[in-house]
Length: 152
Image 1 (tube, rainbow, N blue to C red):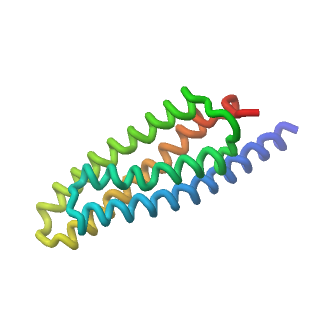
Image 2: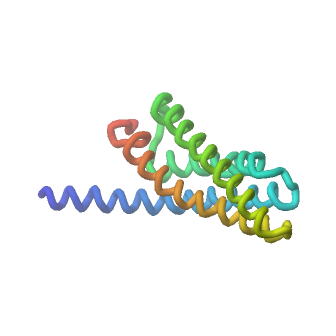
């Protein structure tokens, strides 16, 4: 019986991770597109581009996470679902801003081409989103959307 329960939990976790992954890919596409446009043609710099990218991805990311990946319905748990979720997301925004700025400084020493700079800094932004993807999943699963926080 314990083996069966373990398998059930494991398969639910993999389904949740799959849904989280799909939602995250959609959010990252929105984010990356916003970052590339803001950093490249609009020349807004790494901070404003990161903020625009954050806004472009945050809304679909929350909707996919809460309603699809973790199947939450009904009333929000404000402290856990909004405050902690917001803290994780804002923390990832800060990490994104810092990483993009560092990448921009490094790339600036390597090339004078704006197209190359945009490509490399955008790639660095994408890589950091990949790292944050895993960190956020662990935090969402263990702290924010835990089973004991489930709404009836």
